[in-house]
Amino acid sequence: MTVQRQDAWIIAGLNIIMADLPQGNDMTGVLRHNANKGCHTCKITKELLSVHNQDIVTTLRYHHITDEEILKISYKTIMSRRDQLCTEYGLRSLPSILDKLKRERHLQTPQDVYHATAKKIGHLLKLTCKLFSRKEEDNFIDIWKNFEIPKRWSSLSNLITHYNNFMISIPKIIISCWIYVAKTMKAVFNKKFTLDSYEELQQCLEEEFSIFSKVFVNFVNLPNIHINIYASFDTC
Picture 1: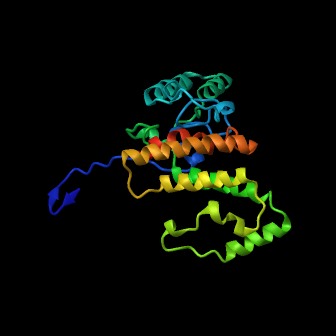
Picture 2 (picture 1 turned 45 degrees about the vertical axis):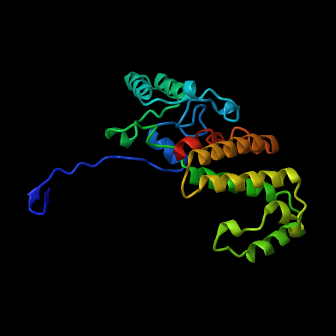
Picture 3 (picture 1 turned 180 degrees about the vertical axis):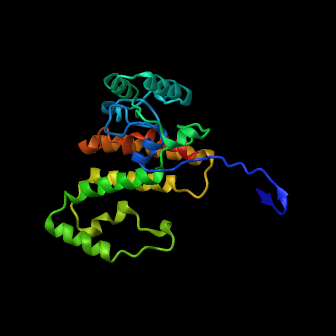
């Protein structure tokens, strides 16, 4: 194209793609999260998503290996055999439209902290509200309607010392879950990161990963909890 009356080559490159969990899988060519291997970062099976101390190196998805697996799938002309390979590898039968670009599909499509966090907190809020009596629910709604968002989030009241003012009989272990969530959110959305910040974030994610699955059976093998393993690295 012509720029200031001079011919110029314009080269565009793809950097980072951010999407929610289903779309992230689509763009990397990985099956959705209800599949046996539905994580677009690793190949761990769905019944092991909440397992601690996972060997990330051996379970991670690597671009060149995924290329080989996609090639093997494309060679199969019998649909049943193609479906078997898709299940085995956790890959879609049709490639992503982004595969036409030169990219590293897994590294350039990290887990999106915002979408994973919003879904996780929404899930926790729903489970917490189910514990309310009708009176407690009405009380919570009144508090929520009159909640004033401060100019600086750091000026929020300490949940540990103020939750009794809400007159809601939530078990202390549930309060602990929300405290871990608050600590993690503060670490995740820091304006700038240092080595100490990354260590703090990693610790918060690990603690959250551990307690949620112990308190709520609904969080066992939940994809939004599983990606805590990768969130600190993706934030880097």
